Length: 326
Image (cartoon, rainbow, N blue to C red; front, side, top):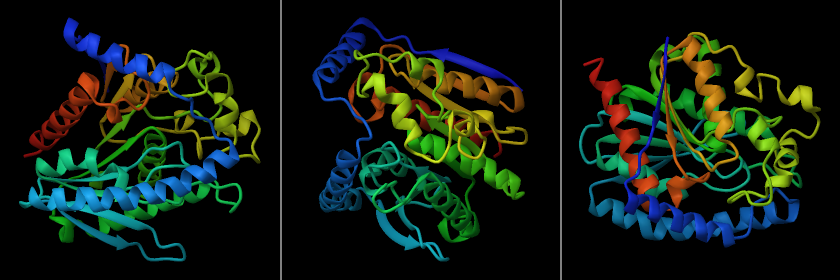
């Protein structure tokens, strides 16, 4: 059981490019979970998802990647967006998208998941229910949907290509992916999962020290309200209850889980979530943490050296996990 920490070293030109991205974000509006903004943002996500589908699906098809939509069974069927590679898949990646639990979709992750599909991975992305105070949908619904997506994927491995399965999530999706892995372990199914990848995940809903210290200079987020924004995800819980392992995987029993890769930007107020979680994970299993200097939260979506390097690092790490079992 080990934790290996790797710090990216950008050459001067790439570091300058990353700083230009940070400068743009420093002038951009900050994100927070105001109810009106959340509902408006969810409507925007639906429109963006449809627009992205019209653009990305034809492009994917030209490169041999096909898109399939299926649904899980049960009282709350969960849509799953599957990207099939042109060839027999080398592995299956269960993808859980980010978006602060209130925005985003599987379709909007096409651009990121296409990188894996182009390299022979079948990607199953979960369109879990987004949180909505108006509709009374909270964190438990998203957790249940992600577990349903995982169970469907494990049940249909042969249909998808009879390949090893990985679980991956970014931001809010990293939080949901970690809870999904723990739930599969509790169901006795985690031996079917080869490894996990968590990109700038959120693992403590009560707020790690770096979240509590976030100020107005914070990139992407409205730093001073971050703790309150996290608490809105489970409004019936006090601070102690927000640390319960059913919603904050940092405090869960992590024994018996597979190896994991963590990636986090050092300008991210959620950086300590990854650092603390990787440390705990490494006490129970093998873990790797990649620290990305001067990178903000969400850097996979902003282009530049951090995004390109992270996509390559994730793919190579997955390749190594496949190769070690060949």
